[in-house]
Image (cartoon, rainbow, N blue to C red; front, side, top):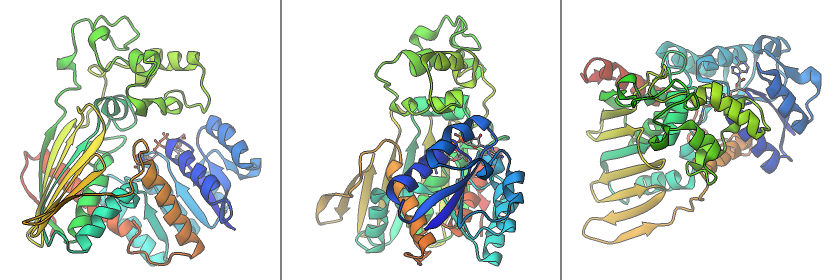
Length: 418
Ligand SMILES: NC(=O)c1ccc[n+]([C@@H]2O[C@H](COP(=O)([O-])OP(=O)(O)OC[C@H]3O[C@@H](n4cnc5c(N)ncnc54)[C@H](O)[C@@H]3O)[C@@H](O)[C@H]2O)c1
């Protein structure tokens, strides 16, 4: 039986723990927990029978006990990933699953890559999309040569208006200085996919983008700091927090239904808890009068060494959250839309590809398969690392994202990566 510790008992950490318990209980078990919120420890420890002496309120305390398990999951917020992962490697953990993004600073994620290599640590980053049936199938078709050599990729990340407002205007990823720019926080997955499909080094990046809409100039007349603070414009505002989080009985924005823990910090919530959070907390704030600064639209153009090109478009204003992808090769093309895939062979057949994609919300399917892959690596059932998203792959996506941000801040001038 392999043992796993977890630092960061929020949405991601608890989801991963749930999968280990539900699908891998014969192979692995959770043995130690760390979170800087006592409420999180109190909520989660009983579910996994974690004794008091294996519950830690700080990472200093956690690491002072030495290596407590065969593997460690780090699922804290972005800004702490570097320090915690460095401490984990120095302490002696050999199998680490770390949430993305690794860091918004190039020198930090390069250092972690080098440390992992030096110490023989398997440091896997949660690029969950790669593990889904849908994206695995796209990669399989490309690798099988059916569309020939890739000439260009046109990929769009439609974040969803409610999701963008929740995470990037009101939530944890609204400030590039406490988290990272949205092109890294949200789109390191998309850039990772493009680089993975392309299988050739990216040599040059240029980018334009802005925070166009969620700013003070666009606040409607009568807007107040909190939606429930007497706002006169809330009736016609799709971002009204009271409607989104409390009164919409059907949760049109389904995604938000799962976010109650984020609003209150508690696993179980009464209606009063939610109302209090929306009246006074971050998620009840006007989307136009907040302190957010990350881009709500950005385009990235990439040149690859093999001569192919790619364009990534991120927008925060779509009605639903979904991704689109058009991959054009010398012999055919793949058209992906919201996890549905079509293959057109030039001068030949056109067919719908059944990817085996499961219709879960968001990327739960990829999350489950990532944990499956992690456990199989941990138990030694799977030894091949080339199909696992180790930090070597992450460095590529992060370098491209940061180059895009550098280009955007300099008016779109190309940034060389070679
Ligand atoms: N792979 C993906 O597709 C994906 C999707 C969403 C989020 N994420 C990433 O996952 C990470 C976690 O996101 P989340 O939504 O679970 O966040 P969250 O805020 O719900 O959870 C983070 C938890 O870490 C704890 N924490 C923070 N700093 C800590 C510290 N120094 N020591 C101990 N505990 C600490 C918090 O109290 C909280 O319980 C983020 O980096 C985020 O960007 C990845």
